Amino acid sequence: MARIIVSLLSEHPIPNILFIKEMGFDKLLFLTTKEMKLKNVFENTLSALGINEAKNIIQLLVPNDDFQEIYLKLGSLLNSERNFIFPNDEIFVNLTGGTKIMSLAVYGFFRDYRKVKIVYLPIGKNLYKQIIPLESRDYPLKSRLGLKEYLTAYGYEIIEANAPEGDENFISKRKQMVYEFAKLYKDEEKIGRAHV
Image 1 (spheres, rainbow, N blue to C red):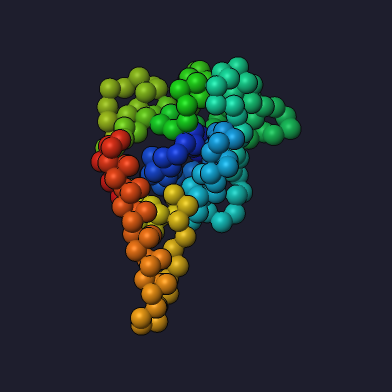
Image 2: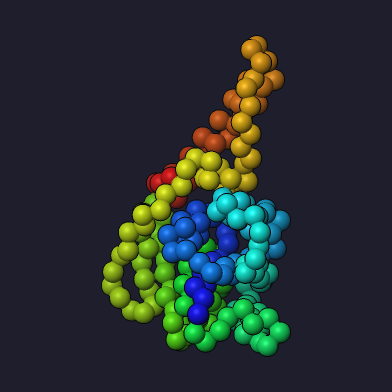
């Protein structure tokens, strides 16, 4: 029996990263779209998690708006060639990311699975809500991200270096990086308070 975390990738990777850190895993299944693939969301998520080797990890490319196609692609993980999901596996599905169609298809596919928990992480709260099995309860998230993990999740590379005194180019680059981070944080604030 394996513990499998199913995540829907989107421009906001933090809920997926927090949930994966919180629950632990044997296997990871990421549903992604062409748009998220072009933005390297999968790679950035793995980097933020500190995962260098993609063993027991699948990135499943799905359309963002075709319920039936998403459902069929999920079904392909059960066939004899891929054998990624087995009947006794414990499945945790995080519906927080992705598109609404992706969430509906994933929910429909896994909701009657024998050992499944389907969850949602509200933006700006350090908790997850269990949807399936039906239980009106919030679960607090104990996991937190450091600044390096947070920046890595959004594709920033952290380079530790000492600048020579008076190096205006270095200082200019640092100012630009701080400006971009502040803008990213401000965008997060519009959606909900970011807790990192």
